[in-house]
Length: 374
Image (cartoon, rainbow, N blue to C red; front, side, top):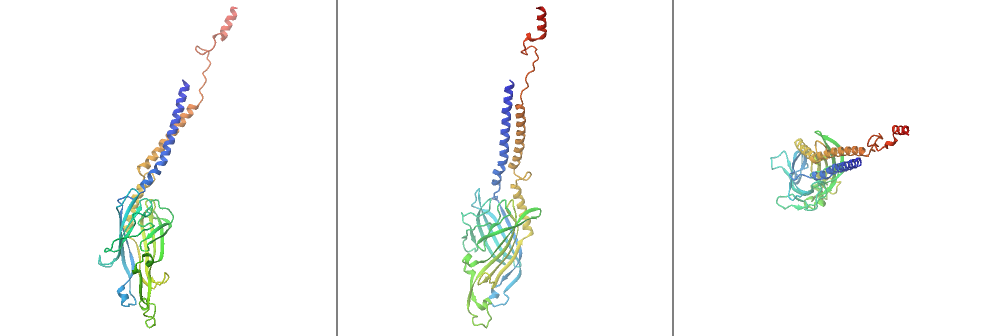
């Protein structure tokens, strides 16, 4: 009977240990299974990013009149980028549409437009990289249809779990991607963010776009290359437009949200990248404090949705901790029961009483009595 109970205990111990191993394995795998499915850009995502600053613009009319100082300096500038999710979308992809406008802040609203465009790109909802299909597009003129413009870098957000490394960031003006290098981790309003910096150019915009507006032929005198009395004053010289930018981005790493940005850009005409013959424009713009606050709020919300930490994570993460506790309890119970079942059973004592199995003739009293009788 004792053998049966010991075998049952050992079986129960084995089952408890097996259950513990199963629970602990599930506890480890559950976040690994769930987190990648949580780290997806919500299809209801939208944002409005406003940058303000100042710049210098070339006044074409003053240039045409031969004005020696055809630039307007210290102009208040304001840009707005409105990003929304549009069709097509899927479980893995989302199409971002960005409406952009750069305006003079010192002009009557609607009359100080410097440039504008509508950009569409379909990205992977996790790593934010553009997808080959459907092909991205750009519309810079209301009167003209959008043109296809494939690209190969990040634009409006960074990947979930952005690391301390460089990332390719696509520049619409240059029509190319270049590395945004990791600078340092810092803090904005109590939120840890990563600072990246991109330096690009000078980029030949005529070669990049094949737009004839980026290659201009004017006389040497118009370019300011010679004195008015020089013999070759009327010679036509062609120059291309060049573009440079220094871009700083601050990113909340868990969600990949860009929470702050600064852009220092310039465009000029020259015979080569090192020849700044005629400045066209330059500006220094940064997110407004209100935009940074809004982006930080959005980053906190998205970070907390996917954060793999107790108290901030999803239900499945809490479930993992519960499974760990249950697994450890099962393991402890199984080991304890197994140790108890493995102890050797005590041999029964030889009392010589009834049922003890001892021979009654071996009792000394019996022997003494029978000896006396004999």
